[in-house]
Image 1: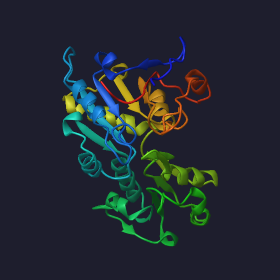
Image 2: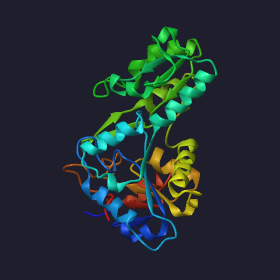
Image 3: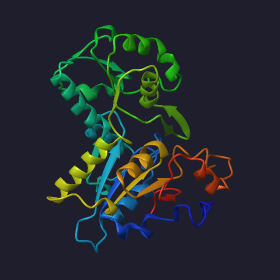
Image 4: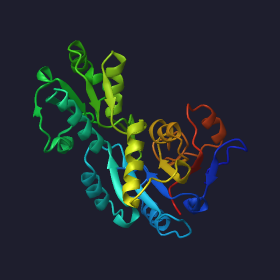
Length: 304
């Protein structure tokens, strides 16, 4: 069942990206929830981006930059996308929270914080590779980098109350390498580093965030677009941000002044009735009215 139009004052409801693609020179596209769901790749989404990149009729080449809150460098995300069958022809570059985190760690080291504790699973350890730091236990750290929960299948942020309290007692700053609160994995929502960072901030901890919805990631993405074009970045009105999360993808784009498109079959899929055996929500306008941020447009899945 297609999305139900929310009314004259609500966002545009799109059947496909092709309806608005000519308006834009650059797409900043989320990865998890748009190109794959953590289990299955979405072939139609990759095809839509390929078709966008091939559009004529603009003074600039159409570009796609994948902007991910993944807590690992871009090459690791590209390897994952390869595994899901997302064609490299669908995008020009990848920018991740992991890339920004590495820059932030470098700044912290320059300020004297060279003893780092990794709060997160071992699979994210590549984020530290080659950095001039010492990896230490939490009690010895002068900087904590949180990439996620050790076991996101069973744990919650509450399980981290004790170590967070110990960090707070010593006023240890934290870098959150993935501001997402949850992501979809095969139709199930799993917690992310953003929940731990929020819990730390709630008890007075100092937290710096790498990634959406925070402004530096958009500045970095547009700077990257300018480098790809060999000149200036496109005007914000010619940039479309695509994602499945209101709190990160849509809120961040809106605060930066970018047109934005919400993919309904993502982390809000259960709320909107897009889960197995559920009926799609009939009152989309009501649902939108209850949200703190509203998208400019919605699409069920990213398709052409």
